[in-house]
Image 1 (cartoon, rainbow, N blue to C red):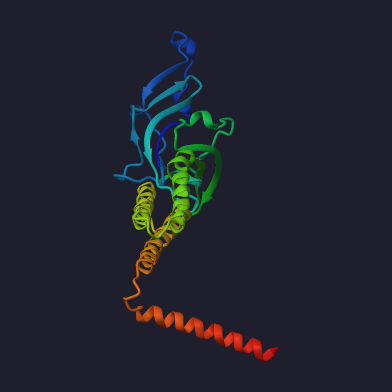
Image 2: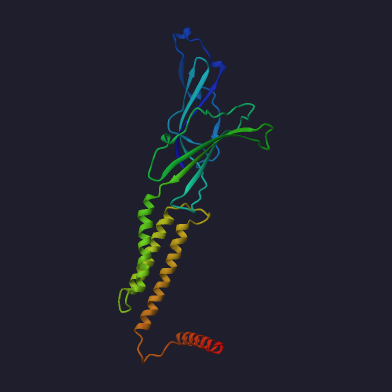
Length: 286
């Protein structure tokens, strides 16, 4: 998942305090992030070239006379999210983002999420694919084998719901109509020349829809979506309808001079024998 985040951090530096009266009433200043110490907060789910994130603008710092430091960082971030596509295109995904320091433990750096900041959908740029349903935040202390003290992690869990209106009209409705046409093949007269061609066109249409679904799915080894299984079944049924239509046409245009195929003759004979045997048993039971 690709995001543009505005990360706000704040802490108190007792060495950066002054009396505004001594400096013409100046109670805050702006500095570059490289001029002061900043915590090494990183994102553990990052992917890409190895960097945690790419800065869109140079991060800057605002320092108040009381020593309170505000760190603003607008970043372009790419993170890994495990997806579950079974219910595609009506799926809901959970994407976790974990912020933590990789060099300061809980005794050196107290990482705390400001609960007064309420994350709502207005901070999420609306688009035609995803809808932000909920955001959960939790603080976790994780103990690594290397270190005696735990590290504090702030975990954000984004619940994203796919907007499936586009897929309803582009895939769902056309595939439903094609399924009805598949049944209409068997209602056509055998003498109609379009019986087999309609069956073949149904096969090609379902293959096309299946490829459209595959093009919108991530390449992963997880469970296949239900809609993919549906198109696979419909392709199989369409292929069987082509064979059935060809068999019906062959039987319809069969002339009396042509011998009956051996396989068909055996099937009919066996069915007739089974029927006669059942009639004999019913006659004996009377």
